[in-house]
Image (cartoon, rainbow, N blue to C red; front, side, top):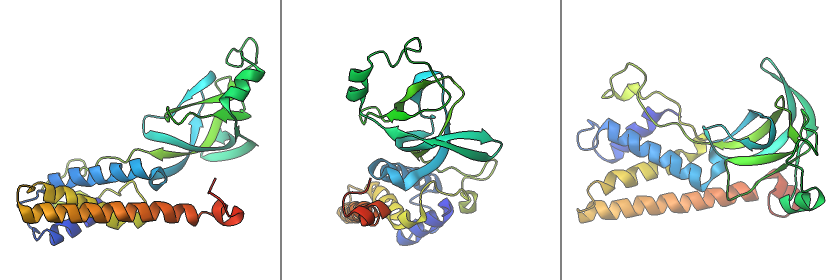
Length: 235
């Protein structure tokens, strides 16, 4: 889904296809806001499977392009563009690990190794995690992370007042296209919030956005293969 496609749809609904009242740069900013709002509320909307390069020790940080760790899958060896699967990595409770071995962060007590057996994640610090045993600095994990959507900007060297310059692909699944459009229109009408008609339209589009977002999040959970297999909450 290209940014220009959503911006064109928004301008038609706004009856401003010449981008006079609502400029292209404004629409691009609001489209960026929409992407980030969806990513914040439904992190799986921007989920990516990637390889995380581990540093020496137990403490690990996600790349700056990520906003949250969703799942650690396995250890891998990286050979060019290929991933060679190694042992699985399971999540463990920090308190249990602390109780069993209070010195597990110290390489003098627990030898650091190239492959992890477990990882520890704290929801209050979504950009970091820990591995056990600590890594020797050569390890790689295959993980699912939620990335921060790239801002909507015109193509390098192009005219920002040419709608076709916004040809970048949006960092979100295409099924969120209508939600993204509704939020963009909400922000557009907020520009004229002092006008009663515009304020009502802004409220309407935000309500549509919120309702659709809640429905999509619930549907994603219910339709998860894990949910269907277990009859419980998706894991």
